[in-house]
Image 1 (cartoon, rainbow, N blue to C red):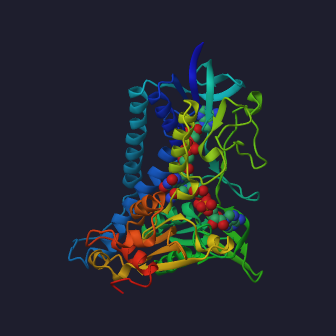
Image 2 (cartoon, rainbow, N blue to C red):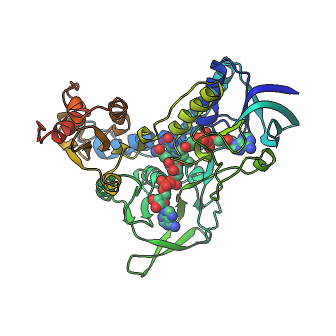
Image 3 (cartoon, rainbow, N blue to C red):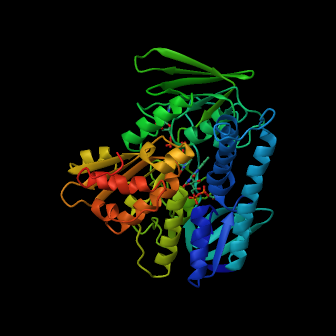
Length: 466
Ligand code: FAD
Ligand code: NAD
């Protein structure tokens, strides 16, 4: 029987990063994945394919709507070749997952294809083409998550679909009904909106992206409405019925009136849930929470001391980079180091265009905690860079402590916000004040000048270009 210092179950961004760090630290490492490709949700049916389709559809929209204004004439009709678009996405996925194979080999990590199930706290049975057993001094559970649904919805995966099917549709929906105005609904909704679908978002809460700062919800809502999204907030979905090629969604609005949506596809994007099916966690004494997540302490250790868990299968934001940080954290913990993660500084991004990005506390959180804060906000449209590229929507908002001027939260909507948020993370990691950032040179012309300007605005209304 093969024996390891560490076995990792699940090869998503949590699992494969944990494996690499364990190997770097000199531990004999194995990774177990039930699918034939490594990379988990993120690489196969999540982050990477969704961004590939967002990029392709963005190019199409630019060609149709903006090229002419830029002085680019395209003779003839511009058409979408959906089959080719999906094939390109798949090629990107294949190349990326292939890269993980390379990294496993490079780091001398043994890869097992099959379902990993605990036999006891130190033995794992792997059921693939054959059944084998391995021994592991330590195990890291990194089994991720799967889409959630609502109890009355029958996901037929043809017309009533999750994100997984939405990434490989064979036709552009005429009318896509999106249940849940969170990250997945808006990102994939925007892909098909750009390709020509009518998109109706049906959201239970009173605003889209409800966990982010309310200012971001408002701005994104405004922009998406300009893009002709139909957004229905405060709508409680009560039934979803498939009739032939039609999907009929019924919801109650704020006034309690019944509203009916008829479309040809319905994307259910109401969140994701921890995945532990087939893991046989109880055989190893690993306890789950009442919401089905693996229960962990501050060291990400489960109820069994030599078994850890990371990523979507435990509490916290379901984000690839959060899973990665936890992978490194656990590898270093097992190696006897004392690592640290500041969960307040894990940024959140929505890859619509304009992009939405945030780190730290929202205004709502600061108010609730009774923290006195000041706000500096700067509109993207005031930047020369924004006018040059015609990306005028959005703003950067900096929240700083009223007394100390320490930056407590940065929230932005705008072109390339996903990349810009890194500056805010660095600033907050080093506990910068708004004045610190306002005194740093930002290259001109760039979108990042909005960060400097928002910092100036927070430091006594000193923005220069408004
Ligand atoms: P996963 O990536 O889910 O990997 C878990 C792996 O474990 C899977 O491969 C699974 O097959 C395997 N597994 C499960 N049980 C077993 C078992 N018993 N034996 C063997 N293998 C097993 N996050 C971002 O940060 N940015 C984004 O842009 C982004 N976009 C997304 C878009 C979509 C459409 C979706 C669905 C998600 C997106 N996410 C994004 C979220 C991100 O994909 C997850 O947070 C991330 O993949 C979690 O990583 P993980 O390692 O915890 O689990
Ligand atoms: P989400 O939590 O972002 O959004 C779900 C939305 O559905 C929320 O707005 C919620 O209020 C709404 N909702 C819940 N129940 C509802 C109901 N009965 N009727 C109508 N609306 C309802 O979840 P998601 O969009 O499904 O994404 C799942 C996870 O994947 C997220 O946790 C996210 O972190 C991750 N993800 C991240 C990215 C990214 O980082 N860019 C992209 C995609 C997915």
